[in-house]
Length: 211
Ligand SMILES: *[C@@H]1O[C@H](CO)[C@@H](O)[C@H](O)[C@H]1NC(C)=O
Image (tube, rainbow, N blue to C red; front, side, top):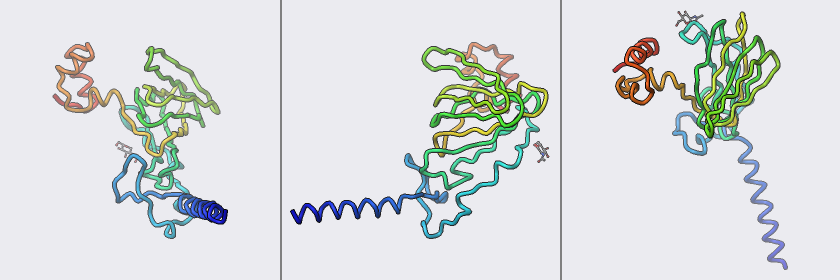
């Protein structure tokens, strides 16, 4: 009986000690990232400043080919989200701006329109079904994990959205850049997309691809 009580006491004591240690794990970005995130910096060196990030208060530079900017606060920019299963980003879309078709392999996304009008959509992987909505200020839309999706400024003025992810490191692959922004041989792009040579060369020229 005494033994059993001692065992229960030891169990309670151990689990409460672990809980205190695991309150947070601010990333040590100098170490390698792994499946469960980065190792932690020493908890006693963590201050309130680690848990706040001001980078999303500044509009991204939309003077570029997509007339849009994504400002991330993923674990690389905001190490306090390490291990917490979430992160966020800011989207700025100038008039005519577009976040081209892309996926986040590791996360679902929820988008909140702060300003302007945004047409957004995604494509299911099972049936290639298209889901498109035009969103106004205050609306949210969710994009399930791994699915191709896009956002377009649907208004006359600049649009602003905040997006949240259920991963500290959602990943980002933009389809257009994957196809036309690297050295994947034009013949392979043509064979795998059914586009003709002129179209592929033109898109490579616009998106910085070679070959
Ligand atoms: C925005 O980016 C463009 C193109 O790279 C650059 O010429 C311009 O100076 C940038 N503007 C600001 C405010 O940084």
